[in-house]
Image (tube, rainbow over the protein chains, first blue to last red):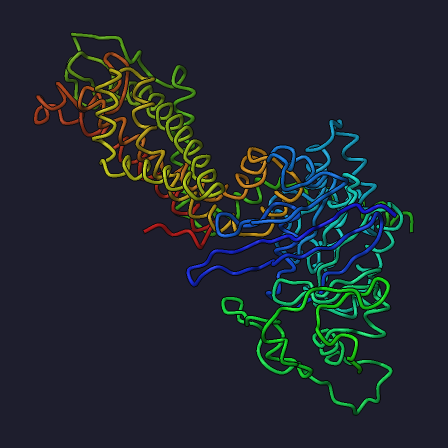
Length: 326
Length: 299
């Protein structure tokens, strides 16, 4: 299957008063047409900054993309003009944000917000846009859509609002949707419903999905392939099965052990990852995870391990990847 | 069952028969009687202005040298001035000038100010810095001095007076709207709008401006009073509306000052009209501010 999105050696740096933070430090990953790819990692590891870099919506002037390529359908997004990029946003790459409570405009009706998006990219009449909005609301499972079109965001619950966000994201039939923690702010039951919905819709319309999350449960169920990020780098990547069956990086192993599992005895303790999240201003010289790692060897402190193949499509950035066992 | 259903259908429209705007205004009047009093005075003023031709007892421009300096009486309720013109009629016609200048200058200044404020907050960075420093320069002059300067450059006349009042009031609105828009800029829906590929103009005009309607409306009302006062001041100084047009500020100058002791009604009634209208707009503006946006209390 051809790659829809190819990110190569993307580097996005943030300039702060305390110095430069390498928020995204040379990550590379692919998204094929119609597949679901997860970007996993803890807060501050650069997941969101990666997504914003793809959209070219990083906060300026603090952040800047200092290197790399983002090829979308063969075109390097980093070389496009602002106007060309604007036409891609929403129409070909859509984004769903973390906070459904504030991602909708409080003073515009739901119908208006959906038709706005359609009208911004396609020359449609009022009626066509309205019927499009109606159809989209139905698609995301909002009952009584005709009436709800005239309602305002405050009349919707969080889950409903996120459904509306999905409807808006789908409104121009994009090829790719970037979902930044789409369900983090919601109840667990609603999370599952929404993820099911996103999976169904992405399959139905052949939309590729990049889910950014810190929730490994989400990843296991819904992602085809997984990229684990730590301190601005991808430290492990592979299919969801590979990563779950046999993680090849101590950080991924730690993440998996810190989540309760049904197949473990109930009394068994969860093991947290020791130490502090990395200090992004003062990363260690070698592997960023070395100070917290149980398997650390001498080489780790001297040289950062590159991402290298350990199995078919399974890559890990660890010097001792082959010898790691649960 | 069918009968019951019928009654429900009949009852429902009857309940919601009061139009929404009326219900809202009634609630506003109950909760804020002072604001409602202000609104009532404004409505009376607006009626007087629009129906001036019908209700004014005399032609405001017609001079009658046989009836100069007549004290208030049965015929001329508010007396006559140095040219024998009816003061009441001139006040009624003067409300036209006051409202025209007040409304248009506050509308233009609040609207332009709101666009500048939102644009400045949206773009941020250097655009924001330059716009704000420009606004600061304008703000550093007292309102009346800047208005005087504009009239001095452009000359008097009603259009120039409107412009002279609009320009110094723009930065006042821009400042208030910008502060609201700054917090708006950080809400995710603006980023979401960017991510949907909306252009800058679409985001500013269709997504951000509707969100600053509360401060905008407050500014609009608060500016009316100031604009009326400013117009009266300019006219009083002889830089505003020119004779023989009826304008309140104009009625206070010339003969009204000269004969203040002999014919005080010439100055008292237009003075009361000015104070009352400014007072009314300020009352309404304050109440609107409290009703629309409790957070927005400009000291």
